[in-house]
Length: 551
Image 1 (tube, helix red, strand yellow):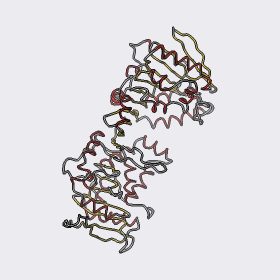
Image 2 (image 1 turned 180 degrees about the vertical axis):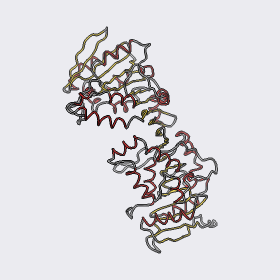
Image 3 (image 1 turned 45 degrees about the vertical axis):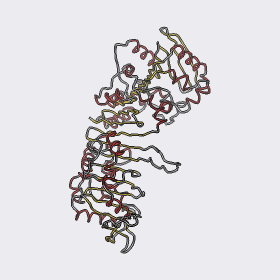
């Protein structure tokens, strides 16, 4: 049973949690005067969620929940199947949004969409399309009963007007209270084929303000919202927080310049885009990070690498991103060794750093998977091979920095040995957990690798410039990977192929049983083509995209 304190809006948020990111690809900025749930909302709400076609979203959820990936996701939450997760949400809502008859039973018109928002007074509002007023009225009564509000009523709301101005026409609002004559816990009214619903304190005022709002002053006529929606593109679900958001336990607001999120999905996959506007000063700093570079180095990665990362833009501008990708405390240790990470390393690199990750073909899992995340206790190169390519601006200066790095090896708790190979100086690091990274400067290209024999192969691929090895095979992912300032691509078929190639002997005693279990889980990933993420900078701030492709 739903707790009495649960608001009506919380029920709708539960629906959105089940449907977020799942549907077709529709979300166009409303044309002038077009009937839209956005017409009932203020031009700058504290936050808004817009779903243009709720019925289509529900149908897509029905498709996606039949996939093996959905079963894997359900299992990760301890559920036997997806119905164990979605079923309780459906029962709370009182209808099944995955089926057309579900909307009809509640009197809803799923094709007309939905909007959830906090208005200018901070009140929560739900606006949803209605097809049958009688059925919807009965549905609302059922929901209100779950909230402990069984006393139905009706009230009149009068919009405040300036002194001396004629009174506005009253707005009639339906209410549900815990007892006759008590304050309304749920309020709703109909206009233009939409129901406007408010809950808890201030519900009647919130509904009244929404119904009295002129179209010219609504979100449907907001230039800011239309511009944001245009940048997000066609979406099934849009989230806009023009003033950012408050996070419990933190001072001020996060994303104070605003945040917009867009999600769309189909049987072919799920796509998300985030817009993070920044101030003029920060945007000027970020602009150098938004230039695409490094495409010519991507093809040098090993052909069987399952993860490829390309960081375009000036490395110094990407310092927060690069620092987050590296082991914790590495930049601190560099400074202790007398090396300034920004001026002596990142500033010496040209735009375009490429990183590849592949499974170690000689992987040994007889001791199980590592439980200690620290690389000081676990050698990652026992499990994966890593290849990094980066062009340097000044090879002579870069060589000096490499010598300085080797001289300060004790600050990294490692030992560095050097040797001459093919006219280049090769550096090899070892530490308590085993062999670490190896690196060298070949012409104007810095090569750093992890894994047995990986450096030698990386140098050979660089020397054979006309023989490209690696490529992003999925056409849509390839286009994003090449066009964005920075991007990462996880090739799931390559990863699953590598996992299946692990021999039984690598698992140790009882290896055949463990391999069978691993392959059962790997099989659930067969329908995934890959995951692609990209980062760019536009005229207002950061643009981040993520795409999950399905076969």
